[in-house]
View 1 (cartoon, rainbow, N blue to C red):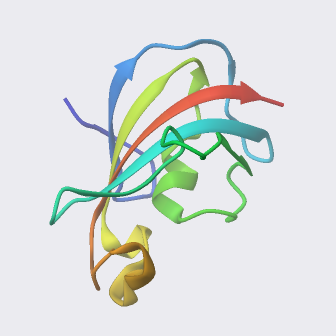
View 2: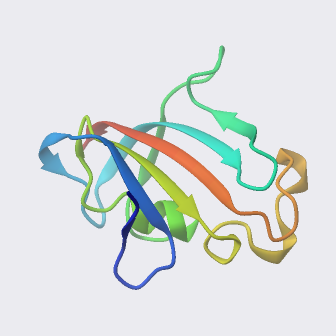
Length: 117
């Protein structure tokens, strides 16, 4: 069951409940993330792939694509969410050809919160 988020078109499904600290605006968050192009179901990035490491970013301040940025706010430590991100809250009409994301491509991200600072 997909849940909506305030002010954005991105929706999410709770895969696993977290506990304790929450992702808030300005927090430094470390996550495992796997991204798939919605139209092709092709994986374009995963922090779990060999040679990759968990990804760290500053939450809620526009450092990552909108759907991810807003979709992770309120997540708790250990929580896993699947985000369904429309193109206009992802890489838009241009897509991201280097990663195999087509113009207007929607994104599916599974995100697991590993650390919140």
